[in-house]
Image 1: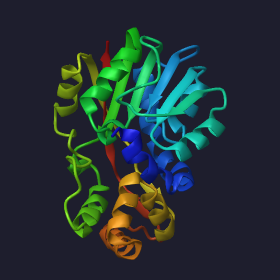
Image 2 (image 1 turned 90 degrees about the vertical axis):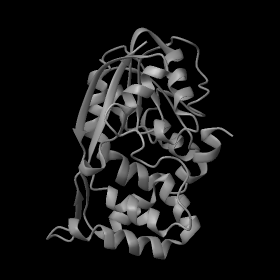
Image 3 (image 1 turned 45 degrees about the horizontal axis):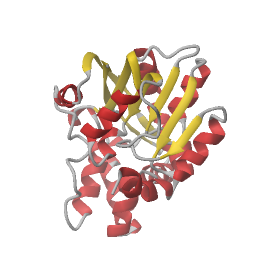
Length: 259
């Protein structure tokens, strides 16, 4: 069973909320990744796990030629509206429907951790990247630098059994992502960190944004929305602002590699 089959349904449940409320928080990270991959006019660009096309939109504004892939058909529908000139498809990162060596720049923004086999996915990214091209992969930074950790803990504590996999911070330890990329046969050439605050104008907006993520949808099915929402709202209490909104500081890390 591939990643698209496992992840696609969950990430399609609230795709418009993800596109409008949560995905845009990654803007600073996308810009840093595009810079690292040297994306510009005429760059053959591939967005691996493109979601609703946010990063692809940034790349298109730089004049890149856009391709993308995601597990969710609902998110891909939004991406096609945002980047109508692009070639964006539904599929598995472990088995990309593209020929070898066709992209100058490949990014995987917070998508690798959702694959069934991250090393196989990295090898596929290597396969489709042209010689001397760039591959940039991002994940959550260290837990102590991510206030979103309180939401993850609240959700985990409500589950009847621990979620499968290593969790959102499985590759966040120093050198872990670089090691995995090296095992896939890529040469690591750089590393960076970017702050991406999550800010919501009120608790209703926060919940709509948070519940739109695939893992949260899976948790809702297991626990029920009412219990989960109450737990999340309690967890974010320390981050409430005087306006009634919520702001959580989060840091992401990215690693740049070449073929």
